[in-house]
Length: 441
Ligand code: H79
Image (cartoon, rainbow, N blue to C red; front, side, top):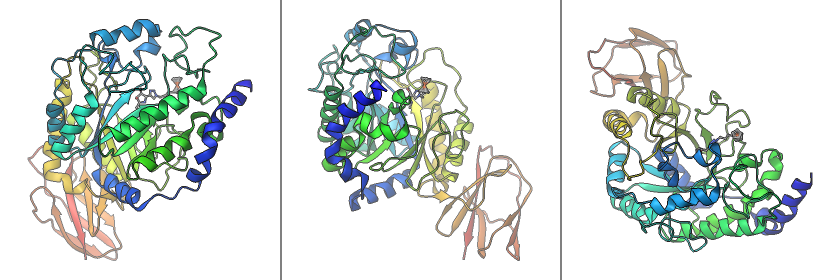
């Protein structure tokens, strides 16, 4: 109780000013256009990169191994990714068919990948590498025509002003009895958000993560605890077209422009993070790992096959959501071979079948044993995940033509009383998802 009071007093002071503005949030025309563009993108690549790439045990290593924050910070002295080449990343990602990149500007360990006057604990001022990772990436993205989004952690496992702590980062050596300075931490985050929105050109989205650290407090308390409305107003003021997303696993708060689902397509909860949220009317995004780790994990070989990832992309699109697929670069700055191979395969599939993914909405037909469906205007796309000989579909609209998307070969069909029957010739071509386009009149 004392803790709640502390937060409310500390946070409401700074949140009060703009809280009302965001509570009656009306997105600008620019923001609405950005949402539409985002929803059409359908496929992005998530990059988790930071000091944690060096121990190679994922981005939670500091919390999981209870590493003292002073010892952990020494990893900055050996941050020297000699093979980092932003253009090579962006080219591989673009060839993979992704339309945007979301990179961890600062994760829970508190290290910033960008030049920041708010803390020396950053890639430029705090490492021998001395280069601004985000600046190089932003330039490469501009050249290649890919949008850039920034992940930003609300949680910090090493700062003394991040106190009271939440449920994580309790073993990182911050002294008991630390007074903390929550209002100072809020100011720090706003200073960094201002940098992110003024140093790198247009930012597609700010992607927050960590509200769940204080989930002992109820949902309604979260905006005031974290100063969310203040941050959202700041972002929209600096860049009206910048989308705000927050991976809090709750129903969206006012001021958010997209809704995020962690490791599940919207409506499912296999990973266990999505039980507390429904599906809103905002553009949706599912983030997912290629193996079982976000940050580089040197022993995690549990990569999903390229075929499974392609089907996951189709399943996500069929739910009307984007897929944000993760890669954890190595400490030397390269993308893991396994990730590059999968990217290339997804890109090959999309170069033929992209029409059934980009710019689509959820399909008219729910997920079936044979696969899923997506829709764009007058065209319904059937994604066949396994061979079937025939399909009976209840479709109210009158069908004009049916054809394979890959080669345009027409399929025989009949339509009687709203029931469409398709006979599907078998194919020798191996594909994880054979797409049929049904065009209505
Ligand atoms: O950045 C990646 C992860 O590091 C971060 N989000 C993705 C995108 C993340 N890691 N775990 N989580 C998010 C899920 C949070 C799990 C929690 Fe819990 C469940 C937080 C509170 C309840 C685990 C169990 C940690 C504390 C208790």
